[in-house]
Structure formats: structure tokens, C-alpha cells
Image 1: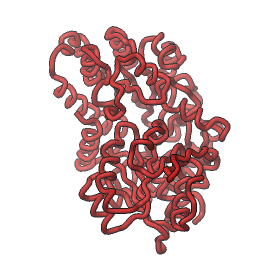
Image 2 (image 1 turned 30 degrees about the horizontal axis):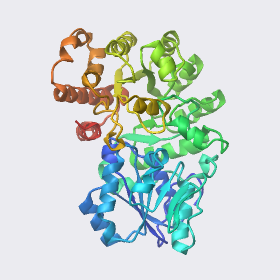
Image 3 (image 1 turned 60 degrees about the horizontal axis):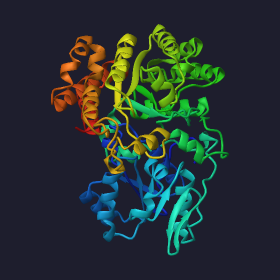
Image 4 (image 1 turned 45 degrees about the vertical axis):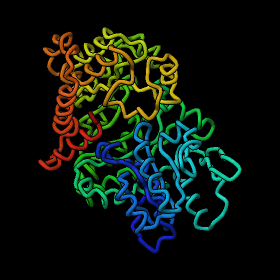
Length: 489
């Protein structure tokens, strides 16, 4: 198979690998590209792969009838419990090797000591899972495979990390059929999820990237980008084979040198011609770059404000950008006709209700097309997360980390008010009359009603503003259901 192409061959598999992940819930129906890349590299080596959600009955049936030799669980912190419990519940029915990967494995390395798993995969897993599968087939010692922590009869062997993948074009395209066979409705969706790069150059204190950078220190550049030719080839196939109509770039930051952007604009516009969404950071916004992206077809863009309070943004979050610089960036993006998806956080350590209002009021001033507000979660091995947990103001059980949509882990009455404000945030930005009523609304025990309102408004803005594509009635319903499942109550 040529590098950069999807796997198309289905010769007799050397080994069967079962991926376990709660995709509709964890990813809100979005495609988990990390998992799909793992499947594609395994298939390129002649292995067969299958995906199963963590439903014990179905998982048990697939394990019994299909007989995988390797079970790979790929999860994020907060979403891990259901998958692990399902696999452990079926462990007596098989003798498969169980490996845990994803962000939970990378940032909570100690979980290997307690969980009934055989190995932990840290960081980028493509090289490790291929080597693991080969070792299982050949029945050779696997305790020295880089990126793996492995349980042995004498204890846990913790191996070093291999270098970051420098040539992303050497990877085959993500194996989307892995999901589409199990969830045909995802194949019918109009959004194509594509990564043009890996990595982020920044070290925000609430984000896992700082820890990831420390893990991989000296093992390659932080940010690696694909060639324009390889990227456009993948998107063109998604358009032709799966009839995708809108591209969702999943990169942490869609900021590339001008020559790359100019080549991308010319080839993308000529060979693809689909509208797209990407993520940008306001302090790197430049008029020329935004103009190129708009010419290429960018119709919506995500940017982060996080907090409207200068001290919190600078000292607590590690985002040294002024309100003036953010407003300048927002103005440039709007001038090019790109719709704005603005990200914010509430319930930060030491943050008062008045400072949360400051964030809300700054968003009202900015007038985005959708104002996203998430709850701060003190994720392990993040600088701000560790500080928050040490303060004693937050619940310290990682199994409570059900995501940043649902509830605040902050204790006390302020946490309840932050939770209600989060659910009314986007509506308050869109309809400032609600802002004037918040003093009363945050006192009322109507959290469930506020959450339903938030979800419907989010679904409307996603379908009509941020991803303006012909979803159709069924497509819109599927997106709404996915958003509801992901957000929880």
C-alpha cells in the first residue's frame, strides 16, 4: 500500500484487533481520528480490525463469535470508566491481550497499577500498536516495546517513548470504514473530519499539551504538518466516495506558513471546493492569512477567549493576550465574512461570579455567532488541574470527570451558580435581555430546563451557522441526538 492512501485490501488477516470506544457519546458523533489511524496502520500490516461500543452484551457476543487476540481501549479521561468496566466484565470469556490508550492512558499512567489491563500505550500509538500486534503474532517478548508500559510476572516495565512521527504523509488515511460499518449513519453525515497537522506550539496551563510536550521533549518538533497534496487527496476522496459536503479541520491550531497556505488555497479551491471550519488563536491572527483561508473556503472558525478577566487569562490560564489584541483578531476574522465560534471557561480556581459575568459581558461585546461555555475540569497532569486539586475546592475523583459540558466539579454554592450560568451563557450572549435577568435565574433550581435550552440552541447554531450544510431532517436529528448524548444531563 502506498503511504497516504486508505487501506483497500482485505487479505486473510494475521490477527484480529477489537477497538472499544464509546464514539457517539465521547465524540458527539465526530470521528475519532486517532483511533481510525491506528486501525489503518494495522490493516496495512495485514491485520483485521473491528469496532465495538462498550455495551457488555454486544461486546461479549463479538468477543465470543469473532475471537480477537488484541483488545484496544481508546478513551479520554472521564469517558474511560464505562469502556474499562465493559471489557473487565467480559474478561473471563477470552484470553485476549488488553491495551489501554488515548489521553487517559497518557496522562494517568498510574491507572495500569489498578486496572485489569495488560499494557498501557502512551502518546502516539501507531508504531507501538503495529509492533505489539507483530509481537503477539510471532509470540516474541513484548516487554520492551517503546511507548508501552507492560505488566510482567516480575512487575511493570515502563518503556521510553519513540520519537514523534515526523512524516505524517507516511501514514495511511484514517480507516473510516471501521466506524461506518458499525454506525452507517456516520457515513451518511455531511461533515468530513480531517487533520492537516499534529501538535500545538503553546503551553496553556489548563491544557494537556504542556505535559505532552514535556513527555516528548527532545523527540521531535511539537508541530508537524502534512503536505498539501496528501491532505487534498484525502479530502477529495471523502467528497467523491462518501459525498461529504463540509470539512471540519480538527487541528489544535490551523496556523501554517504563508507558502503552505497559498498552495493549500489554490489546490483546495481547484480540486475540492468545499466550505470548511478550522481553529485559530487570536494572537496569531493576521489579515493576510485570514484572507487566504477565506478565499480557500473557510466559512467558520473557532477561537478561544476563555476568560474576559485580564488577570485570570494571563496568570491563571497562561494566555498572554490583551483584550485589545483579541478584539483586533475578531475584527479581522469578521471583516473576511467568517463566522465565529468563541470558546470560554467558567468555574476556574478562585474565579468569582462577578469575573464570570466579565467573561459573559466581553462575549456580548464581541457578538460571536455562537458563544461556547464549558466548565473547568481539573484534569490530571495539567498545571492548573494540579493547582485546583491541591486547593481542595474540587472533587478529586477522576472517575467523576464526565466531561466539560455537564457539571462543575467545584464544591459549594458558587459551583451550582457556575453550572447554571454555563447553561445560559450562549443564550445570554445572543439575547442580552437574559443577561439582565441572570441575578434571579441563577437562584432558581431549573438546571435541567436550562440544559435543555442550551442543547437546542447549540444544535441550531451548529446546523445553521457554524456548519451550514444541508444536513437534512434526519441528519439534523442525528446531530442533535449526538450532542444530547455527549452533553449528558
